[in-house]
Image 1 (cartoon, rainbow over the protein chains, first blue to last red):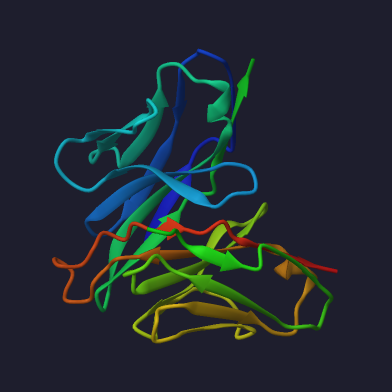
Image 2 (cartoon, rainbow over the protein chains, first blue to last red):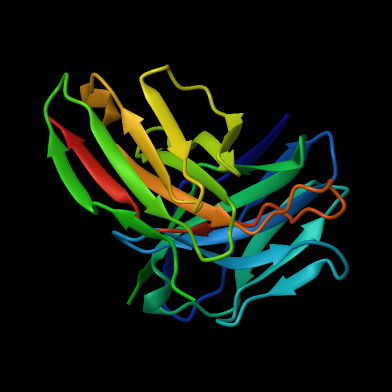
Length: 116
Length: 120
């Protein structure tokens, strides 16, 4: 079984300030890790993913996340946030669940509010 | 490529009724998953279909069911609606193959915009 814990349900931050959204996971098998973003009244969009290789992954809009296997964490960071980053962010872990199938398990989400 | 399309986007039902939601995956994607999203419970996995077969199932009562057609389009049905079924229902597709885990994909999902169901 696998699980994901997002430690903060809400994170307010001033515009142009840095932000870190925390994510810890547990799994008994090798996993892949994802961050998804959800804007109001929309579905989820993939922000970035860790599959293998470099433990630091980046998105096209300035977010980055680092896979830390020893701490079982995959925290999301951005050095300077913008108003348009206001959204809900979901950390997810994908692990093989048998029969050629991967099960994607989500955390409960962190609402990022950027204050002008 | 067109994205995942869900219909209808919004609907209102009353307790005891039943509802059917539709999902068209990205062309070429054969895996379709359904999630229920509520403010209290977050994103909860309902079920996944691959090649018209249910491959995984979450912990929901039998009132929740689904199916997948030969063209990979999927429908989910909720019978005897309850107030607690009010939620955003999200469909997601994946290009995962079934040949064995090393050849399979990684579980990355591509989501539709959801169907928001309100039960009165």
